[in-house]
Image (cartoon, rainbow, N blue to C red; front, top):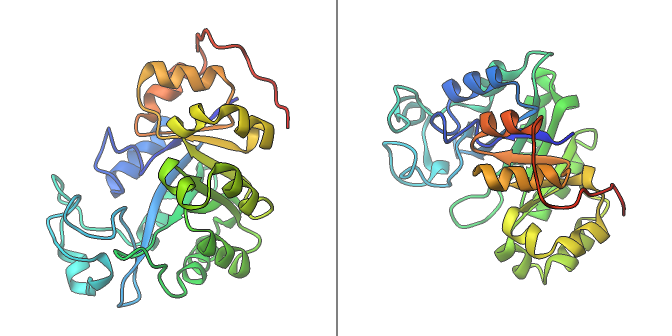
Length: 256
């Protein structure tokens, strides 16, 4: 059965990476919740997607420059909420009966990894007792290597889209580089479709995740292919379709 992940909580339903979004997404019965982590120069691990504040908050400038006071006062757009810390989010999601967590470690506004962020994130996961149901995720292979170094017991997931694959020398070269480093490879749906034969010759279905899939027809398509995981901004729709998928595509078997 395809596992459904709520992307940034469920950002087409509630403000992305917000506590209200995470709490509401829990009620949907998702298999996993995905969110993003940055590190400020003050040492706070904060949950926000972009490396800058403008798109999703009422603030401006790099996330890494946030002081404690600014972080506690900058509002997410269209909410009364502030930017949550990683501890805030883990406290909301750490129930032992809760879904898996996909914790994406981001880079700063210049594309550089934050110093020591992997170790800091791993320590928080350990403190909240969620290591056994977490995947540490990134596009950046060096970040995932740091995750393996500091938290070898925590599963890992790598993400890739067409632009990133091209910069790594092509998808085949990228997949070869991450072999043995990650448990799950998350591939953007357009790249997955374009390179399906290569992907299926390289990885079994249960190690594949397709993202970010939001439209009914596209969700049905990937559910029909029995993909291992599907990440969506509309996890409610994906869950509703999962048990009644109708697709013209031939059913896949788990090979490779």
